[in-house]
Image 1 (tube, rainbow, N blue to C red):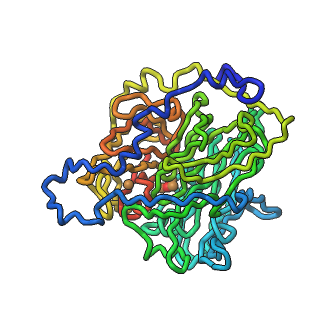
Image 2 (cartoon, rainbow, N blue to C red):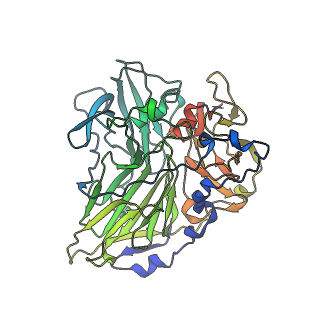
Image 3 (cartoon, protein in one colour):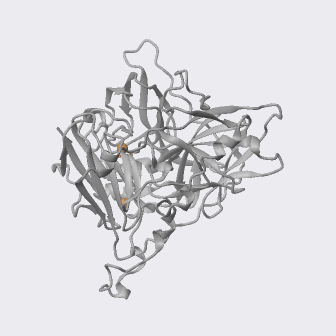
Length: 500
Ligand code: C2O
Ligand code: CU
Ligand code: CU
């Protein structure tokens, strides 16, 4: 990172010169393709037999937020005093009142729903005691953290009811917005659906050069987006609600709350967006059409901040954005909306006229990928295919006793991930790899836009698309890779790689 410029009241023009064309990028824009049935490979299917069940098209619209609840901020996990560990995370059952006067049974970490935010300073390590107080086994997976496979919390890492363990989490990677959630074999989707998820931040705000807003809960706001379907009794009865192709709901939840709004008191706000839903893709934009600045992808800052008008996140993806509220007139109402114009998060802008703020931004002179990296041959081919419970990777379903791929520790390889269309035209699969932060090289041979030029651990792969990744594993061990539509993952759209 070299040249710097300012975003904010002091110098807006510089930020605007960086206008990139992320919103024109076909690759990123095509979640609308989700429902296009091309019938390519299914011409021989008789129509009567297709039925409703095989249609990818039933994505229920979300209801707009009524803005009646101030958005809650997940508390920061507090450091333990006088213990032989730094933090404690307990998976437990709880009761949440989503609807007035109605108790919904939920799961949470250290509480009734979701979990506190665990912040680890870049380069530091912390000991975390993980405890399972549920009636069923669970795991604690640190999504995006490059940890040894023994503590990765993958499906082979179950913690039985009543058991505890201490894990050492080492944050040897750039500052980023990561998250944690269970990963227990065939029960991940249900446990997440009931409420187990939390944010995990690698933080470098103590380093002198950080002028990005970093007052947690003030101008640095975590936003966990999840959609939920409740049954008639307003319960999250997963067995009855689940859809093998990804459970979708009409209720939008942010940080575990319905109908939220956010009061803005600082001109430049940083939002850490996590798509924590089981399956839904979110396309975010501002209701007035204004652009905002994306600064980070899943696993790092972007090479350069990029102005975007919309942003799509598939399940498990994250992005950090800055919104400059000082540019708005106070009468203008503003909300974060999705591609249907549904208000996800209305803002109540209450800026003091005297507040001026600025954020130092950066540009990078080195290219995101070297020529050498761009020309590396493909070493691994991954084919994602299928739908409902017939999902596979390279034609196979997950088998905990099978190693699907092998790669040498510290050696960089190119993976080509192909989302093969099915008879209904296919659907987006978010492809996720444990134990690594990779770079996306290209989509169908085209170099990715600036908004994907940062480290990633999950990548949206459109139907029919081939995405090339540059993958290195810093640690040895056995890791899983899978589709992050949680029902696909539980349905076997997952494999294992041995890093040796
Ligand atoms: Cu978010 Cu395999 O995990
Ligand atoms: Cu993960
Ligand atoms: Cu999938």
